[in-house]
Amino acid sequence: MKLKIAVLPGDGIGPEVTSQAVKVLKAIAQEFDHSFQFKYASVGAVAIDEFNDPLPKKTLDLCKSTDAILFGAIGDPRFDNNPSAKIRPEQGLLKLRKELGLFANIRPVKAYDNLLDKSPLKRQIIKGTDISIYRELTGGIYFGEKSLSEDGNTASDLCEYSRMEIERIAHLAFKAAQTRKNKVTLVDKANVLESSRLWRRVVTEIASDYPDVSLDFLFVDNAAMQMILNPKQFDVILTENMFGDIISDEASVIGGSIGLLASASVGNKYAMFEPIHGSYPQAKNLGIANPIASILSAAMLLDHFELFEEADLIREGVEKSLKLNITTPDLNTKYNHISTAKVGDFIEDFINNPHDTNMNFSNIHLGQSTII
Ligand code: IPM
Ligand code: MG
Image 1 (tube, rainbow, N blue to C red):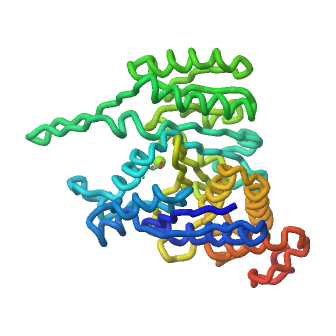
Image 2 (cartoon, rainbow, N blue to C red):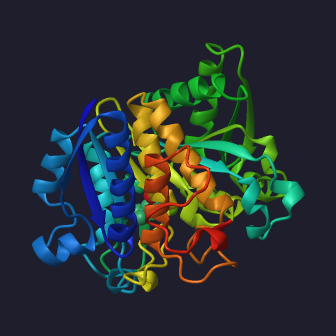
Image 3 (cartoon, rainbow, N blue to C red):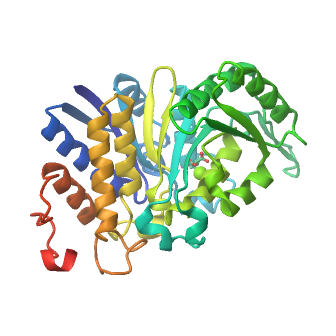
């Protein structure tokens, strides 16, 4: 398959982790005889520095001319600590999502057996957790009208949803549930918010098209508690933009590191793949950032084009790296100095030699005996 992929590394650790995902995609292309072409563009704080625009037109045009987008991270403390900044890196990401119509953000959350003890939650609570969060991404309070009174003392952000915006992601969530455990949980705040009551009404109607899928409802405050009390009860979680943002960071605790969580953002025409973690500026250029979320986002990119065997091979490589402790310091208590690039090298090697059970890979300089 021929694919043209826009790579937007962005800020902080974005470039380091994204380059590992590109490395892995190149290995896949070589092994499976695909042709992946990578085109780079800037976004976020680096784009503000260079073009005074967090999403330069050139970047947006490139995204529109490619088959898929691999996104790194955006954010910079220079802006976080300055509430009056008019131009902010996050605007680049939000505009990209909106302009490309990426209305559904899919965030898989899984407890890996090898990492059960890395989570602060008890292993018996998280073991076997496998959740797919469907977060609405281009509506709600993120995109509603914003205002600040002239005296600067009153502010408002409007949370608005239309039936159409709810329907299109709800269908995707129900379809996903049909390939999983046939359960959708709608997370909302329908006891307080009118917009949530609309979600309940529309999603309930749509549920009748999917009689094999059960639908239940949870208020977001209760859902936040259930997520750490009994995460195994969830299959597909469907929710609006901001609740999904919050719940998915919370859910990342189950996996043991936020550095593991990948995501796909899809619309009718475009698709973008990005780790859910942020730019982690403190770790920039230290080689300690976990590249797995970015690498798993690359696997989701391949899934999107129905390259399932290829995507599975990446996931197998990731699981192998976790099993053998070829992991960055957020997960690794056994070996020192396994860098971002080393993890990428290992997974690249695995793809090139999936049947090399000796794991004596050329790029790993740990020595076989230390690895196994
Ligand atoms: C995410 C991030 C973004 C969001 C930020 C960077 C704007 O937290 O993708 O979860 O809130 O959507
Ligand atoms: Mg977030």
